[in-house]
Structure formats: C-alpha cells, structure tokens
Image (cartoon, rainbow, N blue to C red; front, side):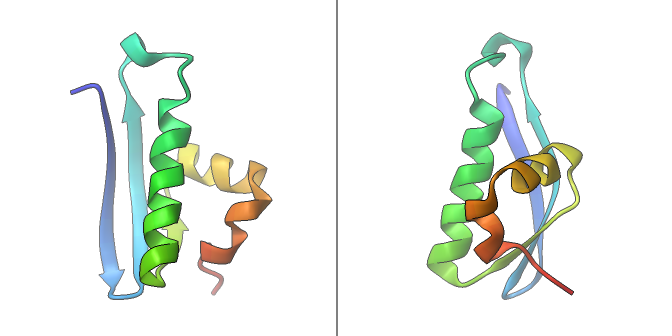
Length: 74
C-alpha cells in the first residue's frame, strides 16, 4: 500500500478522518494533501462535515482556510 486515509462515518453528515499515511516512496509529492483534498471534495459534494482527528489532516485544515466550509464545528 502506498497511501491510505482511514475514516468512518459518525453520522450520515459527519466524517471522522482518523489516520492518513503515505509511503516514503511518495515523499515530497503532496500525496497526503491530495488525499485530504479529495476528502474535502467528497464532503462538499455530499453535504458532509469533517472531523479531522488525524494530526496530519488537522494540520492541513489549519493551513487551508478554503476548507473551513466542511470543517465540523461543535
């Protein structure tokens, strides 16, 4: 496996991203950011909010204000 994002649907409209991992072979290619981007696009398309428990995903959300529309706010 070269890359994965582990998530679960806490509710029909809530996705928890638990873990994101990219193999060292892909280091420097922004694959992790691409995984987060695709999750955000999926969330937008399906009217889902994301809870980024994964430290990497959470850091991408913090550095990317454009993703705030899908960030779950309690």
